[in-house]
Structure formats: structure tokens, C-alpha cells
Figure (cartoon, helix red, strand yellow):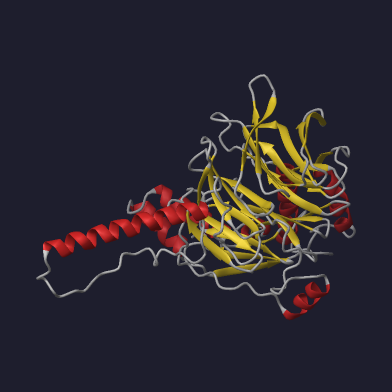
Length: 473
């Protein structure tokens, strides 16, 4: 009903065409469901991470637990799904009975669909990593290069066309996450989060040389997740197992900017109003009180710097009571979302470092899944593998955030904190989520060896031709 109203306002010139497109994108992102045709891609091992290219939104990379990387053509899958919808539409118009609703064709066509799943796989690399691939990342402006990081402590740079490693970097620690710069025309930096306390930056030269830039020091424990700011190309956010989240400016020698504190919110920073009705104070008393306030402000600022500066001491402030499982910036870069093993989702202001007052509530696991997780060694909140990273993502319009929570996906409205929907489909814990801004699709990978595709429900429903029941008279 809201879209119909906006369409009418656009026709009469009340609203701009951009308002209609934004409302349509928001409506599509709010109605995600499991794709009806070719909904899953299967591998022969666990899938830890996925990444979709930023140029076309067509090629999807999966980081597999067997040390290999697979690439899928999502455009080909979408075209095949449209063909299936057309066949289904023709059968519905002829009013013929369907042998099975998924295939929409003759009997036995459902098996043909799942046999055709491999045709969307472009390639699977050879096993160049000794252990599983923990993270995979496309080169931002070129799908001819991608990066992989593994638990064996190596980072590989791949040639997509030849499917071979063109450069290998040995790191002493396990690689948890790698993130390449969003703006390679400004700087070509690959940030690496490892099992050590430090973040390593790798610089790529014009002649193809790769060298270590410097280390970002400050966390007390291994770093789980990273995220580049879409607003400022030099700002990097990091989340650690010790529960701390930091912002870094990679241009500076002391790159540390600030750390987030869960006990400091936007309300705690508001100035206190002194309702003193005595207007006959002496000027000396006013001067003395102002000096005391200035001295107190300086001492508090120096104390804050001493507690947060990585060069003097390690970071003491915590954003969550547990480890940080995932972080991501909003599309405008003004806010940061974080998800911890304490089952809490928080929204932060990246300019002030203060926690927003948006309450997402405490994410809860059902009793059956909680008992299963406890047998698998879950923490007190029922989260299994609380120290492993989980990639979270937002819709490209900045309205919704998607959180992998156990075997389901939680969809929250960012500004209101409302739980909008819960998506079910996996049978094992979900490791990573990726959002495709070109088609408003969501991709999830799990320990059940599958990648599931979630798209708006209108893409799964055929639109039949409307019959004109009016007479020609």
C-alpha cells in the first residue's frame, strides 16, 4: 500500500523518483526468502567465508575447509531460474497438473535441477593451503585477482584466469580475516587479522611487489574481524576476542584513533544542567570553579588517553562482554554494527565512539538448539565456537542488518532495533553472510557444506498474464 501511494505521489510530482526507488529497494530487502530454483550450492567440506565481487555482483567466492576455493556464476543461476519460472508460468496458464512444484516440469525434472547445479561453478582451485581457507576477498576493481588466507598461516594471491597462485606470503600466525581496501585507486592495502594481538598491513606496489607496511598494536588477544570504512578510505575497524573494538587511521605512525566502550552511550555524554538559583555568586568563585572544571577535564582526558593509547598500555575498554564475532560499517560509514558472543548486537557512532541507544535486545536460542550447542561445548549464552568470526552484513540502502545466529539468520531494522524476520534453512551453524546489492540477494554459508541463496519473494513467484474479462462492446 505504501508503494502504491509513493507511485501516485511520483506521478503528480510530490515526491522525487529517488524516493520511489529507495522505497522499492527497502521493500525488496524486507521480503527475503529461500530461492525456489537452484537455492543451494554444495561443497565437500565446511564453508567458512564468502565474497561477492563489487563490479557486477556476479561472481561468488567460497572459502572451503579442504583448502580449496570455488567460484560460482550467480548471473547464470539467475537466468536459469528465470527460465524455470517461465516454464512454470506456461504450465499454470495451460492449467496442467504439476508433478512437483519445485521443478515445474515433467516428472523427474527435479533431479535434473540438482544435477545442473555444478554448471554454475566456474572453477575450484587446487589445494594450495595445507589447512582450511579461513577468508577470501576479491580485488576491488578487478575480478582477475583475489586473495585467500588460511589457518596454516599463509596468504595467497591468485590469478583468476589461470587459477594459480602468483604470490604467497608466509605469516607466523593463523589468519582469521583478510580485507582489501575499498578504494584501491587511493591505496592498495590488505589488512590481515591473525591469532596474534596485532593487525598486519600489506602494501602492493605498482610493479607488483608486496611488502609489509606496519603493524597495528593495541588488542590484548587475537583479532577476529576487520572492516574498512566506506566513508574514509584510511579508516579501519577491528574486533578482538578480548571484546574490544578499535578504529585505526593507517596513515599515522600511531594509527590508533579510539576504542568503543559499552558503558558509554550518547545519553551519558550529554551535559549536565546545573539548576542553581543563586545568581549572587562572586566573580572569584566563578573563576575558581571554571579553573577546577578545566583541570578536571584535562585530567580526565589524560586518563582516557592513558587507558586507550596502545603505545603506552593495552586497550582496557570493552564493547562486549564476550569476543567480537563480526563488525560492519553502515553504507554511509557514520555508524558501526558489532555482534559479540554475548548474543548482543550494538550500534556505534564512529565519530564519537559512543554507543547508540538503539536496543536490539538479547538474541536467544531455542531450548532444543541450546541443549545441542551445550553438548558441543557452547558458552553460557549457548553460542558454539564463540571465538570464531562470523561475517555480518547490511543491505546496501542501510535499512537492515543480517546476523548469522546459530542455524538461522536474524534480520534487524538498524535504526529502530526491531527484529524484522528470521530466516531458516541451514542445519548447522552459519559462518558468513554476503549481500549482493545488484539483485538484493543474500548468500549464507554454513558448516553443513551448503551455500544458500535468499532473494525477494517476488523473484520466486511467476507473474501470470492478466485476462481481460470485459466485453468489446
